[in-house]
Image (cartoon, rainbow, N blue to C red; front, top):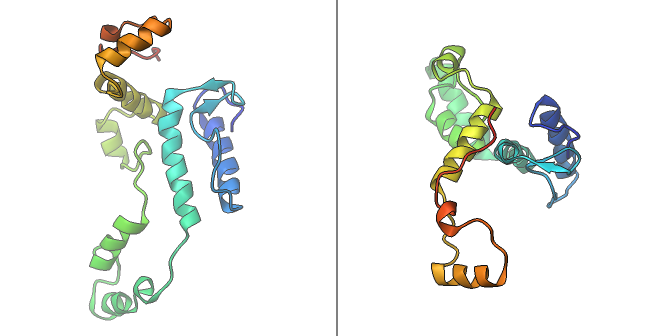
Length: 174
């Protein structure tokens, strides 16, 4: 939970440490851990996207580091130190472990400064807003057909026409 009203640094660090502490204390379910702002009085679509990255990273830390003969990698250590280039960056075992052990974020920025500038110098909220907008623009739930929709609309005061639901939507401007 966060007291911050928007997805900013305060929101990130408050959510980060509260969820991390809960997860590492053994909690296996944390309610209101994503999207929520202002002490649970508000919700932000961009926060759902950002918090998804955060929760994935926290879950990865809870998983821990597996130590066994394969992960100790004595053969790769011998190869790199005695026969190889003296570093592990290009070693097959390193590349394989990066695919299984490293969490690649969706909106977190891992680019170098030049690539970041070329890609528009966006911050995490801007990248999350694009994902939210792309999702809203392209996704229409197909949970039920038009006949069921008509029955629902007969019984409940649904104000948004079905046709309008399929049109592109927009979020608040920045």
